[in-house]
Length: 450
Image 1 (tube, rainbow, N blue to C red):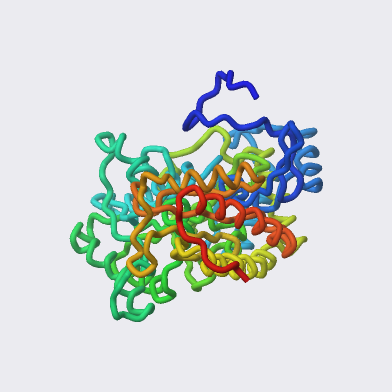
Image 2: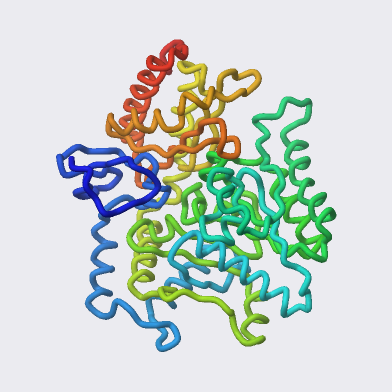
C-alpha cells in the first residue's frame, strides 16, 4: 500500500483503501473483511449499503440534488421534519437541519441565545457543560467540550464556558447510594448556576449517555430528573446533545426517553443520516422557535441545511429503522453485548468497568480495580488495542477517559442490525486482541470468559 497522498487528517496512520460495505462489514481492496464494531464513529446505525435506502437516494438524485431553502420548499425536508417530530417526545415540534454534529450543537446554542434576546434576557449567554465531554470541534462547540488535548491549543481563542464534573460515579469511593450520587452530581449544576449568576446562564448542555470523552457513561437515574428540575428553577434551557445517542442507538429514538425527559432543545446527527449523507438536526420546542421567527428570523444557517438529497437519505434511514424494528433490536442486542463485555472482566483484571445503554457500550482499562487507577499512559493502551483489533478485522473506537490525558476506554457500538451470531463473531476477535495486548504489556490474564 502506497503512503503517497495529498490528503491530511488527524495523523499519519495509513489505512487500506475501502472497496465496499455490506451490512455490519467493510471490505478493503485486498478483500479483507472488517466488522464495523463502532459503526464508524457511531454513525452507520442501519449498516452499510442498505439497498432500499440507496434506491430512495437514487430516486431523489434523478429529480433534484439541490434546492436552496430560501428559494424552494422540498418534500424530502418537509417529510423528514414531520417524521422526526413524530418520533421524538411530545413538545419537540420544530426542526432545523444541518450537515453534522458540531453544526447541530452550534445551532442549538445560537437558537437558545436568540430566544433569550426575544425575552429581554440580554445578560444570559453562559452555557454550562460537563468535564469530560465532547460537543464538537467548531469554536462554539469546542468551548463546550471538556477534553484537554482538543481544547487546550485553542483555549486563548475561546470564551471559556463554565464546566461541572460529569457524573462518573463508578470512580467514586464513598458510602452514598447510586441515587444519592446522582443527586450529588446534579446539584453541582445548581451550585454552578448560583456561582455564575442565574441571570447570566443561558443553558446547560449534556450528553444523556456519554460519547467519546467519557465512553458510554450513564448517570444514575436520579440525575436526569434533578437536572431538569434545576434548569426549570432558574429558567435555564436544557440542551441534550444526542448527536451520538439519537436515532435509536440506545434502544430508544432519543436517549432522553429512557428517563422521561423532554429537553428544550435536542442536537442530533451521526445515526440520523447513518452515513448515507451528511445530515443532522436541531429539534426544539415551538415556544422557543416561534418568538425567534416573530422577531425577524433565526440569524443562522448553512448552505446545505435542508438539502433535498440529504433529507431523502435521512427519511429513508428512519423508515428503515421502523420497518426493520431496529430500535427494539438495539435494546435487545445491547443486553446481549453488555453480557459479553461484562464476562470479559473475569478474564482480564485490567478491565475495570463496563457501561452503556443499548448498542452504545464501552469498557475501561485500569491498573487497579479497587482504586480505579488508570494504566500507565505511556502504554498508549487506548491506541494499541485499537490497532491490534484492526489487524484482526475488528474496528473499535477509543479515547482517553480522564479528560483526555490519562485513562483508556473503548467504545463498542456496532450497527443496530447486528445479530447474536455476529456479536459472538465480534467477541472472538476482541478477546484475541485483548490476549495479544496483555501479552505485549505483561498484564495479567485470568480464567477464560464464560
